[in-house]
Length: 351
Image (cartoon, rainbow, N blue to C red; front, side, top):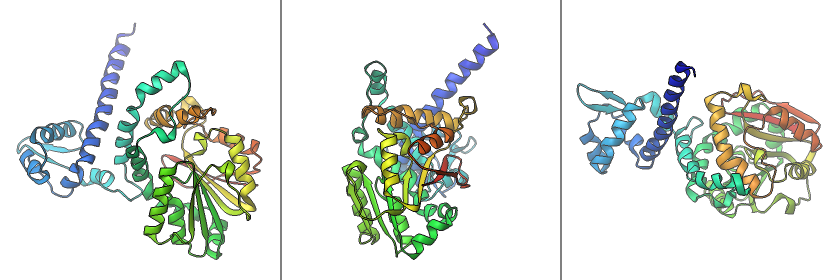
């Protein structure tokens, strides 16, 4: 055997295990408010952090040391102080923005909790249903995605679809399929007061949250959230704009669902699809982001589809596969939009 390759791979294993532990440590820091506490305070001793947080000294000290070893916190060995760099705080303490990333650490911890169950499915088949994930997990997903939907969908994303913007400005009809807690519809309703919006999702808990959020935002008069499957949904009028954000690859019946969406879409309407950004070829997916997505697929996306007897398309479905699927479902127009993102790809689909 190649001795250099042995050494390199052993170091890789240590690095992989360390990365997982960093996610766990970051989860603890987020849950206990330590990142927010240290933001902008400069150098702090262990005692300073303990006093300001009111948390247990031993846990705080070990957490600080672990975060310093991971270089998430800066450490001054002369004064024995810890600090959170503003460049790190930009991503860690920015909930509600389009650059909030603490949720990725939290999602890793939540997903690994189902690893023992997924291991069993390798022999038995099946999977974990969406409703079987914890309320905490659903809240993490919302925190991670909220900023993009609220800040970028009504602005940067719609800028790539001027015809859609024009229709919504004049007064159109929009449907968000797999709406979750309703952030896209609420954001659009606030930006386009002449239009009406419908969100549908089969998860009752998400719809209850969406209805509450719409009321809090003052948009409940123009946004309707329905807890039902699309197979059971009907509309007397077609929709000018239909969106499906990060959910097509999860479907239990992709072709059937997409054909129903096509039937609901106006002849000149736009079906806006947000998916995770991966290469079509496996050999081009050897990146940290792609590896992360394969993990998301195994512990969340693919297993959901398989749990319902679906094909399990998986998170890393790719643009070529998506284009073929849309054409098979009867759509003629398939455009990759020029929206820049390190993690998402955006499609405009039409009749």
